[in-house]
Length: 62
Image (cartoon, rainbow, N blue to C red; front, top):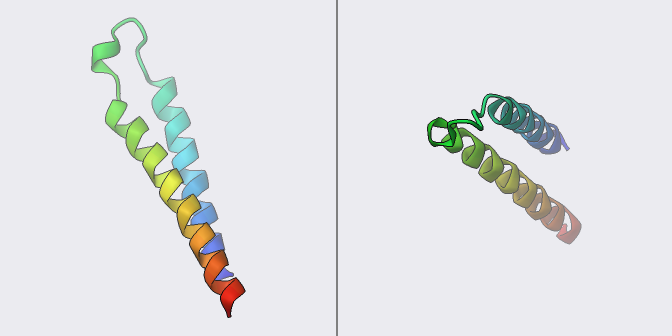
């Protein structure tokens, strides 16, 4: 169960950083936007969700 706390923390932190990156996005000059930060946060959230699903599957088998 401690693994879930860590994954939830990572998901919340990545979501907060995603919101900050979207807030800092300059819509008038879209070429200078923080796209790397937005994409990396989305990938981290997806990876943590998949990790949680894998942990649940392993726990249900045991």
